[in-house]
Length: 397
Image 1 (cartoon, rainbow, N blue to C red):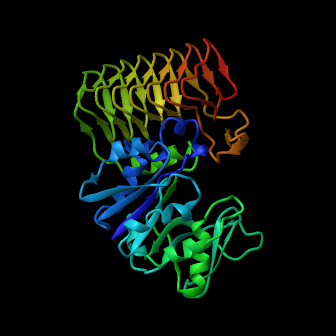
Image 2: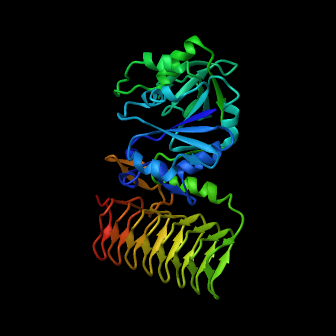
Image 3: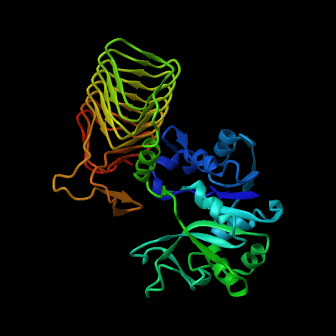
């Protein structure tokens, strides 16, 4: 069995994090998104075909040609002309039956196993308000009757999550699919055409489905995986006077200095210096080669490799990129005074994140001056910096 994973897109909704790397290489709970996907596929497929495009060399270099017992093959989508067009690029590589997965969503192994029992099918999720999704209309046997993107009239509650089972027959239909109004060949249009000729079914999700369409959703995905972490693992050094409680992992050659208090599910990578006197709380992952200075507090955050967070800083509910330097006394505000959901600017529009607590999104190679205060949901783009004592009320781009 082969799996096709679509990882070619530029992922503009996750800017500024994906200005310097493709989304599948963003880390959650100490592993990249693509690794989390491959973990769920392990033992179910023999080969994963990664459709690459944007910054493809980074994906190829990171994953290589073999992942555990799974063969990894790469197929380039040179033009971003839609999901159907992406799948069509794999035609010379597909042998018979295969599954297709979005490269920024993580699907539960149990649902992938269930999907493999069908010849032609899609995974779906029940949504109370399906109006903003692609919606399947099905009969009493879950056979597809219609598929409409963001329907204006109610046709059902089963929404598309971007995971399908096909065989080579689907290529005939993709080749006959016309361009959409967006100028793309949509796999959903091909499926609708296909379902008029053959029985195409839906299978409702029973396990988790973790979507990573926006930067803050990385925190939700990380929280899910960190809550499953139950054992403490100390491969580095913990000085006398440091306290570790809960499922804390400390990597090789890392040191947790005296006076530090770490509780909950926390991952600390290799070659890190933590403290003294740090307070690090649950659902936090810290990459390799990081320095967390004296009296820094971190909670529910992603800190990527080679990043320094200087003394007397507070980082909460935030995503911090690689090679970042946060000056002493940098504070991320993570709650609105009025108690409302935090808003964040995406492609020029303010988006309701649905989160009561959200700190900063700081991209690779960014810096903050000492005493910087960052408003909830604000972003600092790659290589940009704040001034000393600056109040970051708007994104720094």
